[in-house]
Image 1 (cartoon, rainbow, N blue to C red):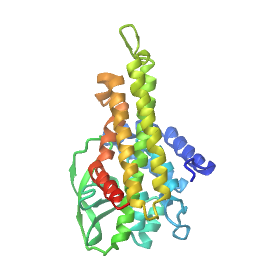
Image 2 (image 1 turned 135 degrees about the horizontal axis):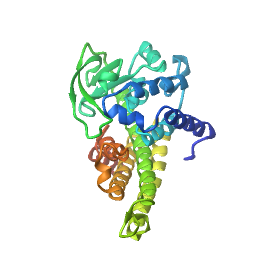
Image 3 (image 1 turned 180 degrees about the horizontal axis):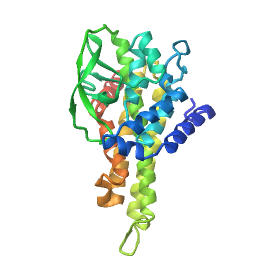
Amino acid sequence: MRFLPTDEQLAFAEAVDEIVDGHGGTDIPQAWAAGDTAPGLELWRQFAELGLGGLRLPEEDGGLGGSAVDLVVVFERLGYHAVPGPYLESLALLPRLVDASTRAELAGGAVATACVERVAPFALDADAAALRFAIDDEGIAPAAAGASIASLARVRRLNALTPGARTPLDRETLSGALDEASLAAAAQLVGAGERLLHEAVEYAKIREQFGQQVGAYQALKHQLADVRVALSFARPLVHAAALALDGPTRARDVSAAKVAAGAAARRAARTALQVHGAIGYTAEHPVGLWIALAPALDAAWGTPTFHRARVSRALARV
């Protein structure tokens, strides 16, 4: 079983990095958090030219026919850069659930978002989306944006949706789409954790206390090493879940990956905050984007309690 990305996947990840860096890097999520969505939507258009909108759509629908591992590779980079917008909904959740004409719009780069009853009751960035859907046990329906809801992460704006007429959904199809969304969230968490670790290590080299760099203190080195270990254990679980996405152990593997990735990212956020001190809380310093993003994503698309329970039930049946 291969857990390393292929050359093609590495090239695609590098293309994502180059596009983000070439269009502003951390200025993009900072602007989005301040209410200016223009740089983020321009980035979305650049990704659409790369074909990202059709990543998980078959070629006959105008997509790239990418695998779940391709999805994981891309979402890790999106998490690393704290790229704002409903990418998870557009690329991971909705392709399985919408009709052919909507899939064509997604492949063309349409911005889409969705809420799911009990799982994700509020839609991400509905004001910036051209397509909005409400999903529940009765089916999927186009929806209008309603009241906005405050989010822990400044780059995540949530909205209530008002649904229209529903189209019935097959329960297994919906379950598979929700697991794909959870998998994408897990990959984002790994990416966010990696960025937090990078920022912490770099800041530890320049911040001084008691006349020396804080990175010289053994206790802090241990904490940074613990983050490295946690992320290094989480990433293979995420890739294994991607390989199992269409298999009988899907629920167990996706939930295990989400739990591990969330715990690793939260550990990275705590350590990065400790390294940065009070500046990590400020809106001016970009590290705060990831410090808030980690717990927000950890709670999204299934809380740790939900996913731990699924793993426990699966193990009990073995």
